[in-house]
Structure formats: structure tokens, C-alpha cells
Amino acid sequence: MITPRFFTDVINLYLPEPNASLTNGILFGIQLSKNTLFYEAIKKTGLLHMVVLSGTNITILGAILGSLLGFLHRRLAVILIICAIVIFILFVGAQAPIVRAGVMGVVAELSILYRRKNLAIYSLFLSGVVTGLLFPQMLGTLSFNLSYGATLGIILFGGTKSTSSFLWKELKPSLAAQLFTTPLIFWHFRQISFIAPIANLFTGWIVTPVMLFGFFAAILGKCNFYLGLPFALIEFALTSYLVFVIHLLGSVPYSFVQF
View 1 (cartoon, one colour):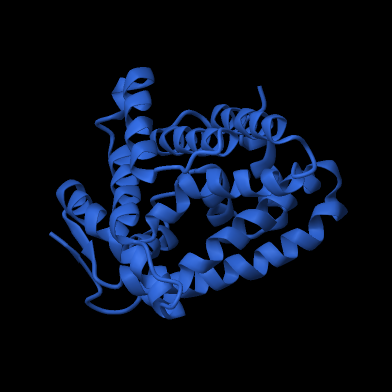
View 2 (view 1 turned 90 degrees about the vertical axis):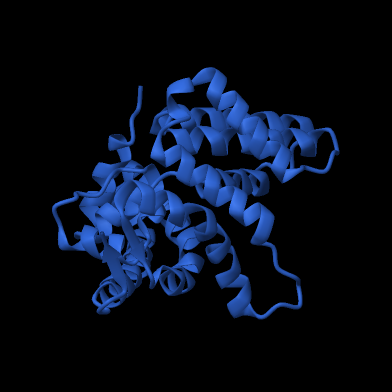
């Protein structure tokens, strides 16, 4: 079966470090090397959640396929999207956050099919139940708890009004997620990043473009080097911005405390 390495080799060919590791982490959940200055910087800025698989991957996958399959009958399009979600989970490996996100994605697609409003809390609860039944060993993992907690925080407190300022729309979901994840991080690692809200504000908006151009670079680059090259160049520019922000904020004194 095809594994993420099938595409990570292409990303590694196109991009230098740490851009390549950052892209592979965001796209496929490939762990960053813990023995690098970049890993320390990303930890200090509270952005480690960015390089793990999460609901963002599923959401973007569903949105892309929804746009591409819009000409099909709704039932067929939903079935194809659900199949793609399942294949993606098997492709990257059934890790706790991606299983939870996958179940939520499937529930959302079914709600579209049957013309029912998707209740986020219900989907989140159902994803926890399904994960517990299929992969009970995952329920106690930190990655699952962080992903579940962040999602719950965003659902409960991350919503903003259409009249809210751009700054508040970007900042509030991050603060809501950290409300539930900070205690978990402190409990497991005895560390707190005070600059994390600012780091998320400057980087949160760019994750979706990084995923989109990264996917196109990886897929087209596997077919032909020059087909993927334009997307890889844009991916390099986007990830260079991320690397700059991470290093800059990671060097701010007294912004990170470890007990």
C-alpha cells in the first residue's frame, strides 16, 4: 500500500530544511526531529499542533473534493468524499486526531446528504465513541486528548460574529483551543508558551494555503518534476514565512516557561 513516504520524497526534493519537514508535518503528520533548533522554536511558540494531523486536513480535503465533484449527483458526490476520507485515514495511518476528525467529516457529509443541519457537539461526541470502540488504546493518548480538547474549545467558545474584526476572528478560535489544551500540555510537559496566542494569530491563516500548494506539489511532482515545480515554489515562499515567524517569536525572551 502507498504510504506518506511516496510523496514526502517529492517534497524533500523540492524544498530545503526546515521547509520540507514543516510541509511534511502539516500534510502527513510526519514528526519533526526533536534534536533541532527549529523543533525547540516551534515548541516555544506553542505551534506543535500545526505539524500533527488534525481536522484541518479532513476539512480541506472535503472542501476540495466538494468543489471538484459539484457536477455529480449529491448522493454520489458524498459517497466519493466519504471514501476519500477513509482512504486518507488509511494512507496517513489511523492516528488518534485523524480518526476523530475523519468521523466528524463523515458525519458532516452524511448530514449534507440527508439535508440535516450538522451539530458539531454531536459529531464530536460520536467521533469519540467510534474512536473508543475501534481504537480504545487511543483514548488515553496525549494527541487524541489535545485534538479533542482543542476542537471542543473551538466549538464552544471559538465562534465569532460576522461583524467581528479580522483580528478577533483570527485570535478567538486560537484562544478557545488553548483554553482546553494548555492544562493538558502543562500536565504532561510542565511547560507553558505565553506567546502562543500571538504565534497562532500570525500563522493560523496560512495553514490552508500551505496544505493546498503542498498537496499539488506532491501529487503533480510525483507525475513530473516540472508539473509540480510552480506549486513547490509557492510552497517554499509560504513555508519560509512560517519558518521566519517561528524563529522570530521563538527567540523572544521569557515567552516560554518549563518547570
